[in-house]
Length: 236
Image (tube, rainbow, N blue to C red; front, side, top):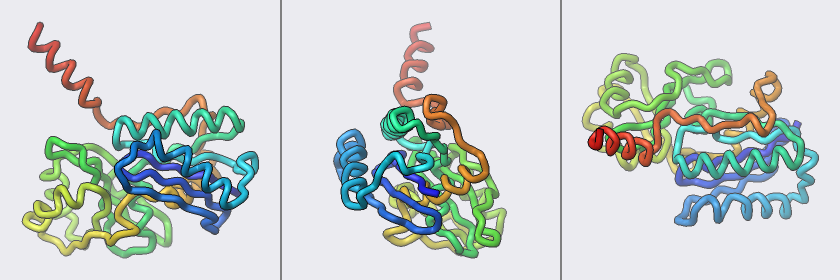
């Protein structure tokens, strides 16, 4: 079974190919260029370096959200186009699930935090049981205060991953009462290999869709939509 994984849900752009339990290739960039500039060239390079025949893949796994609205739209458009062109199904992997999977095997609670601005994070709470990722609290948008309050009630050691760490790290240090640590480089940002691996498990379980049915997971309205609604309220 061969899965192409893609993640453009945050600051990182990442492409990977996983075949059964082998990571064939992974190309990850965390730099200033937009995903529209990087994602397809990265895929082309992976295809070239591994001599990959895209017709040989079984499915395309994508980090479906939450995350950057622009990044999610670019990822969705890319996988839909590829899926339709190749006649391959798409597997939607929740972004926070993929981030949590980076810490496979830990006995700690895993808590992804993505900066959602306005003192909010996209987050979820997970653990690994016999090698399987289990959801303690499903991904959602919430205030960092609410998240820390919840984690304090669990009374278990926590490991954090995600781009919310530099933003809210000081707050976490001041307010979290249980033991915790921040994941190191190489594990603390989105990785397409985790998306592809989770995508493989979902695909084998029959959890996939036709490419034209794929839609990003938005846990809240975009900034533009919120500003428009606020303006309409003022005018009304």
